[in-house]
Length: 466
Ligand code: PLZ
Figure: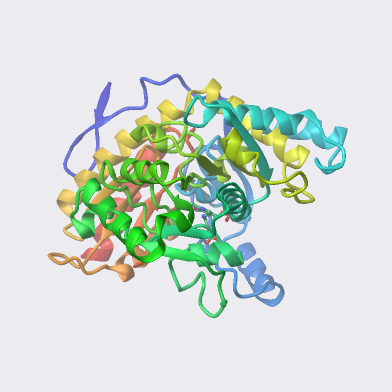
């Protein structure tokens, strides 16, 4: 079934062919956009004033409102404004906010016990999450997992594990990479402002090589990989490298989808040289891209994979999963932390994974992608500022430039995002140049809401480019 909507009357694929998501997954939130006040409204303004007096200014705020409730594809603020959610809390609430499958398991767990520390007195939920991860992640080889609190912590631990296994130190990352905000992960992250500026010195033995950014480098995957490999070979020495760490689709860097063959060439190079290939699937993982993991699209089987965000429906949980012999390299007691794999977060993960299976969210993400890409491409026909529409599944973006050039148009991206917020649609920006508008709807969002959000985006683009 298709319907006709959008700027050029394009024929847009429908989500109708998928089974409906249970109505109660909307968490009782009316699934419509509604502006009750200006944005921000008076109650949010009051809280904003308290926020600036109480909260360190280093924490930015995308949407200048305070949230009261959220569910399905909608976020409700304290003034009664309802926003269509194209952010999912940065790719976290893929099963929707307060999904009943998550809530009921969390409620049972929190009432039974809240914490014992897995290293002190273990519980089954932790083991069940590891079993699920070992089954779902790419490859049928024997795997192990370990659980942590945040994406950055998972990345740090993946590096520890790779160093312990290889007895080497160097870590290779790519341009535009984002891996977190802790000291090691700041070193792994590419961008100075806002992530690293003034926060050095950074961890040693981190080497950055070129990535594949088809819009800007116009190279095929094999050529881009050959450049990266040449740099590793000449400047680092393959036998010094513990790990190559890469996001299969670069997230904060601008939703950069590498040219086909780039990832597999790098992975092969790692295999040939005893280097641990780590896929950072913290943003791409758990159904987001239309497969369980982004590596699945390319048939790439990483040695280690880091996950977080979408894994637990909004509770803080992260993991490293990978080849048993690599994961088991660190000595007993070498990995851990007080809260890693907290029982409540594990219960949430089991609920979130069950919901993803029940509603076949990988397929739903793929269908959302088809719908959105069709409409975004129609917008590209209309607006010469859209240099590229890209992404996979429900992780897609438009990159904005000054028309007729490749000069990034960051002020336009900021203006369009701001206009969308004022009109009740939550969108995020991204990119090394700040010129990318990215879209990460909850995977249970309704089709009408999705269309309405895209209508608002198109209006905002028209106004801002007029
Ligand atoms: N690796 C690929 O996307 C987190 C960052 C938001 P944490 N991305 C959102 C911000 O501005 O801090 C991310 C990621 C990839 C690692 C991380 C880090 O995950 O849970 O934020 O530590």
